[in-house]
Length: 158
Image (cartoon, rainbow, N blue to C red; front, side):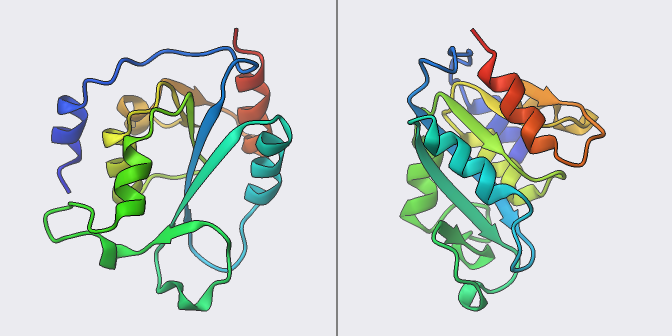
């Protein structure tokens, strides 16, 4: 994929909005198996805060085996050159979310492509040195439940 090129060409103005004022939130993550570690409860917290939450999940395997209620895609929805062949991915990337949460504790090239092209005002994820260009806010914690820390830090933003 052409992630570095996408990062360079994306001219979206990045900023933080007070969490109380935020209306739209995007959530992106990889599904590696049938379980979603704490993702469901994190998403419910956002929804309970009266936020409009749009979710996009990347299945590393074929998605027929899974029964989740999210917009999903696989590598079959990405062309050889890294372009998206599916409208739900194109629409997600083009959304001007107030916040875009990346819930995985590690990076994948596919998710990096989505983060690089995203029009979200503030992208949030777990800290790592190589993740710096993809986020405006990174959470650096050794806690197992880093999603709770992500939620806590985001909700205190003014």
